[in-house]
Image 1 (cartoon, rainbow, N blue to C red):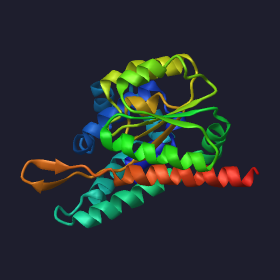
Image 2: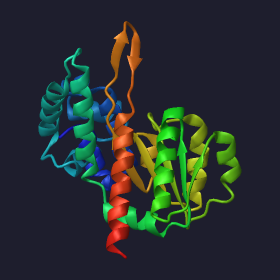
Image 3: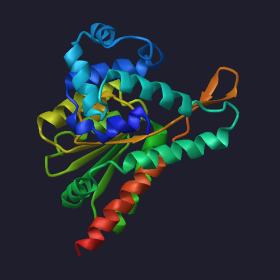
Image 4: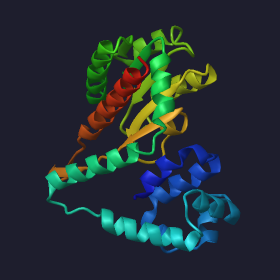
Length: 251
């Protein structure tokens, strides 16, 4: 299991200080393997007890065991640079394993009862994937609306109520011009489901349900990276299948 999978598994138990420490760990994995618990606490402006409680929440007996996990999982996850097809398979497998930790009964019940499911993607590829998802929801008799751009999203804010659900797809989970919308949804108690790249991010931390997908960039030509969103399609398809199962059982 990767660190991202552990974060997803235990996300409901993580507080704001935990997330601060985890953001630092995710950005400095090689460094964490060499420093002490006190040094990590100092670097994250927290305390030794905060770090210790965090690693125990993740299932470790102590900081040393956590460091060993980081060392071994990083080594296992290091990909062969030229085996691009294998990278895709690896990303898909890790994405599906992460989805196994989601509270699907609660999520699908929320979607089933929603008056309207609003879908918004922060980029063209994300919107295209959500648009297909919205079309599929019609087969289940669910009212779904894909919002095509930020201007129309802002116009729709007054129509979105706590009886609806907002599905938000993003790569980074840090798109700046959406954070105000997320704040308003939180304030109004509008259920939010985020789908972002694995790891701690703003969208996920403010969501009722955070679904993660893995994306390993690879180079086509020098200094040009490709980030395939095939795993986002996997998440969306998995979600649709789970919702179909829920609605079929309840009939």
